[in-house]
Image (cartoon, rainbow, N blue to C red):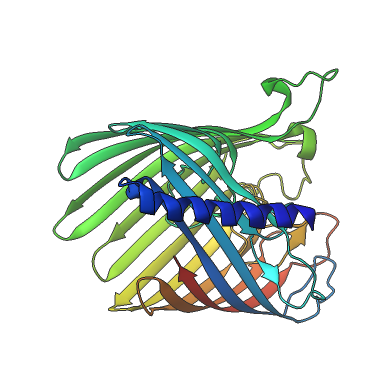
Amino acid sequence: MRKNIYIIILIYSLFYISTNWAQTNKNTSKIKFYGDVRLRTELDRDSKKANGEMRPDRDRFRFRFNLAFQYLLNRNIELGSGIRTGNPDNPQSSNVTIGDGFSNEDLSIDKAYIKYHSGDFYIWGGKNKINLWEPDEMLWDADVHPEGIGVGQLFKWHDNLQMQFNGGFFLLTDNLIENNKQTFDNQENISFAQFKFAGQKSGYKWVFAPGIMHAYMTASVGYNYNIFMNFLSLENDQWHVHIDYFKNFEDLNQKVDRALQDEKSGYSLTGTYRINKLSLKVSYAHIEKYAVIDRLAQDNWVRWSGDNMTRSSNFGGIGLGLKYQISNQIQSQIKYWKVEGLQKASYETALETGTRIRWDLKIKF
């Protein structure tokens, strides 16, 4: 309760400072507040566990709230911070379920970073939205804001052709493996490097973005990840098609269940058709057990959970979505997913299943 009071006081202070800044300083564009509020209705049906038992049907009303600010200290340095609702132990989601006995909901720090940029170069340190480019959240959930360093450089070769390098190094946990040595070598971490090629021709925009992601997680789960990732996107004013492909090259022999040790590939295909303010999306996904880091990937497709987070791998299925853009700041959408597990572990008796329907109303500011 005391933590929430402190955060409320901080929010009020920031709004007060920004209001007075606007009245007393001509450089009002230096500070910017932004965020969103989202209301959600979620229905989960036909969800089978790996032991063959059915999970109870579940209906939930949920909401989320994000508030952040960005301050330009000068032409090269940017400061940013933000807070969010949701369980602080679950980085995948800022949602709160309505009806939890009138309890006070958690608020936690979502962003806190310093960013330097000069021309087409940038580097930031702290806690921030990951600087990885992806057309969806199949590899990395947009709510997961890692702590570490991000860097990037844009190279412009032609008016219609450019390449963006993005990279980062992020700490996960402080596992003291060797005699209390709190060094980077003993801390679990994730690093990545990505090259994003983009261009346009004849009304079409395209993106080709290959890269590699390494996750050192031996202490907590007993194995690491070496994921080759590739994103391909093509769009015009009405159509948008993108393909994701992942391949984990880490040798998992004798590190995981034998029935799952070769389950290391994944792909998804999505097509979106837009008519004015209405858009229809159709997706198919096939994500094997170790193709992605399941507790950092999207948490939309499946209900399967563990340790406060969603196990978003070892599934295949379809997704459908219909979105209506009411205004620049307000949108409403309904989504449907139907999935089934791909491979049973040696001790499991059934493939997990699930059907999920969501309706969202989102307001940005």
